[in-house]
Length: 58
Image 1 (tube, helix red, strand yellow):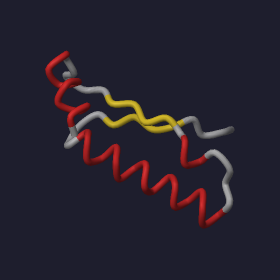
Image 2 (image 1 turned 90 degrees about the horizontal axis):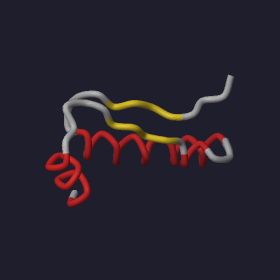
Image 3 (image 1 turned 60 degrees about the vertical axis):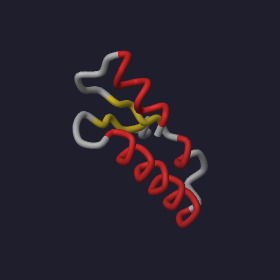
Image 4 (image 1 turned 120 degrees about the vertical axis):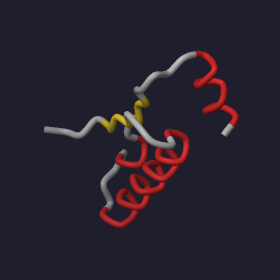
């Protein structure tokens, strides 16, 4: 089994994705897990064009 990433489904998706990326990079650095900091973060919720635009601006 090899982790591919995470899915965020609710909450402040922009904030949570930034914090998750920081966490992944810290784990990669601390434990030497090559590529862990680049894992996929997928957002799913009631996402539409307006939501995507707002997330990109953050």
